[in-house]
Image (cartoon, rainbow, N blue to C red; front, side):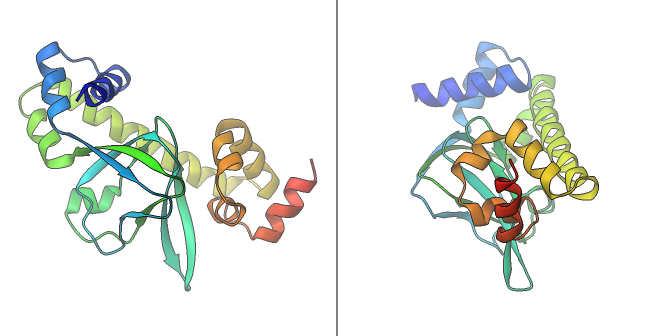
Length: 191
């Protein structure tokens, strides 16, 4: 319970301020989840019901295209993971979520958080800022793919998110950077 409260405090500090009573309410809707490496936290075709806060571990979001896995997002300690379209539309997700390392997550039930937004502007602010951060990260990733070459994408990721480069398997890093493993190998050896 104490760790859940610490996570609620961290979420509130990072995404919006709350009173002590509101901190208790936020703590109540957080569900701790521990998973081993390689566990699909959300399978393709399931409805996403949670916003996941990564306390420990490396988590990826991926989908299949032409029978190949494509890694869309990788989060680590302090990161947020959710499948936005599935979460909002309550439809099956085309994206899966998997642990790349043993992980400890704290799941915020979206329906419960949405109910809290009806009680206080503070909760609206928290939800808004979580979604804003997620959208900015998605836009930055899309811009990187659109406007940067392979070496620039690798360099930016190494600078901004070294944990991805250091901790994720190389074939997943290559997929995340939208390049072949061979191209990633050439880029890495050019340093």
